[in-house]
Structures are given as structure tokens and as C-alpha cells.
Image (cartoon, rainbow, N blue to C red; front, side):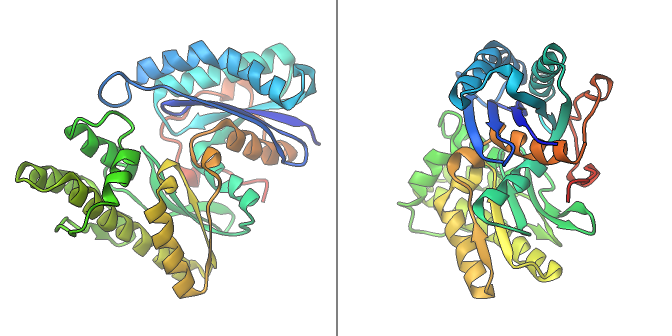
Length: 327
């Protein structure tokens, strides 16, 4: 079974529609993000944003791919994990397209999609360091399932960076601003290094950095120190996962993987271990519809469809819950 697959992403503040061909080539990848006027993501407002723009995004993706809807073999959507209102909006759009075109529906785990699209970088069997706003996990395919070898015990690293930026009055998303300021930081300030087994925690860094700022520490030094501390924690658990599994590749995924310093630290670790690292281009690091479509194509070829009745969102869709029938 082959065909063009459309993927609809809507787990958080970003709405995405992507289309892949039968060979897995990305034909279109339209992305549009909701930006709150102040503070962080407001789930209902983000969902309203997605509802308003998804129909047009589907049309734009079809036009960019030079297809019409009769060329579609299936529609895939981000079934979870994520923010409930946003997930429901993406699922509703996917169901409507599935019913109107009489094509199969495929529910995709958002975290797994970040790993699967790594194929396009040349990675074959990597450890995924998945770092985004709401998710921070170290994932690998072992014994027929995607396994989480380590994860955050409190908040995602992206949320930590954005929350710290919010205390400084930096609008969402703050992480890119903090990255720029970190380049001018010179002093490594003491912050909690919270690694417990294979898991990490970031709330202590957030609290300590806020207190140091109140005492007069510069934003530049704090940004530098937060990155160095948090990224070292992530690289440590990733290296341990490499050692445990015997794998020789690291794949970066998620919006925070656009940070050049994190990429540099992963590169250093991999070179010292004789391993390789892979980083997708920025449009595939962000939440996007192409990765949903690409994973959907694999699931389509394996016959992993779901009915409308089975297409309810899974707000806490764990990576380990995915039945990997396509590998």
C-alpha cells in the first residue's frame, strides 16, 4: 500500500500541516504558531488559533505539494501527548478530512514522530534526545518498543527557559533570546545540577536563577549558566543511554535542539565516544505536520489505521504505549 499522506500537528502552540509522497519525500510543510500577547501558552486561545487557520493551511499544503485531495491516501494527526484543547482541534480537522474524503485515519504519537523523521538525516538506530517546551526525554527503540531511558521529573527544558525569561519580562518564546544573551555571559554561576539516575529536574535551576537575578546577577551570566548546567545534565543521561544500549548514534529533536550550544555539547560527547550525531533542519525540529505525515506513512504501510471511535485524543500518550508495528 502506498500513497500521499497528509499530517496534521496540533499538540501545543504550533499548528502544522505537512504532506509526504509514497517514497517519504516531504512535499509541503506549513507551520503557523500562536503567540500570546503576554505570559505563556493559553491552551484555549492556542486551540482557537488552530481552528481558525487549519482549513487554510490544508489548502496551502495541497497547493504547495501540487496535489488535490483525491490524491490523498490517508490523514495522520498528532493524537498526543499535548494540550487537550489543541489536540482536540487537530483531531477534529483530521476526522473531518478522513470522513469527507473517505480515507483512513492514523493517530500518531508526537514524540515518536520526532524520532521517526530522523530517518531523513541519515540516522538509522539512534538515541533520541527530545527537548521541547513540554517534553524532555531520552528515547530509543529496544526490544520492539520505543523506550524512555530518562526524562524530566518536573517541567520540560523549554518551559523552564521560557518561565525564566518571563520573570525577566522577555516575551514568549524566551529561549532564543536567552541563547543570544548566553553568548555574552562569562561567569558560570552555581545552579542545582539535578540528575537522579537517568532522570533530570529543572525547577531547582529556575528557582535558583531567579534568586540570583534578584541579587544582581546579570542576565548574560545567568543565561550562560542555565544553559551550561541544564545541557550538561542532558548530555550526561544521553551518554549513559548510549553506553547502556550499545547504540552509536544520537538524534536531536524538539524546538530546544535548535540551540547551537546544546548541539555543540552533544557533538563533543559523541566525538569522544566515537559516535555520530544528527540534527534535522529547523522546520523538522519544531512541531510540524511533515513529521506526523512521515510517521503516518510508515504506519499506513503497516496497516496501522484507527476508526473514528478510536480517534479520541490521548493527552498523556506515553512513548512506551505505542505499538510499533512498522519496524
